[in-house]
Length: 99
Image (cartoon, rainbow, N blue to C red; front, side, top):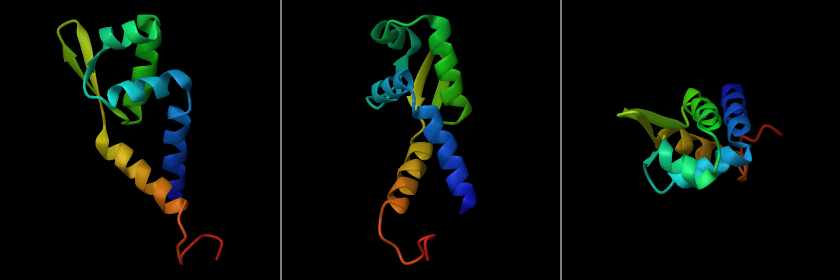
């Protein structure tokens, strides 16, 4: 269980940044090219690369090469695990850590 807390805390730290939250929101609509993300956010390509590398490193997004651009999608498995964890810690249960 401690691993769940540790892993979830790492993921929450990664997404707890305004630009990355915007990227996640955009990707919730489906796959996007880096060029479209750049246009919507008005950030530099190097800044986008930094954010996307961090999201990919923590398995929050999938990346695939498409010609000279990268295309990104959310990793539904990771987000579903994070949602389940948040649901678990915010609901009443008999095996709460406070007992």
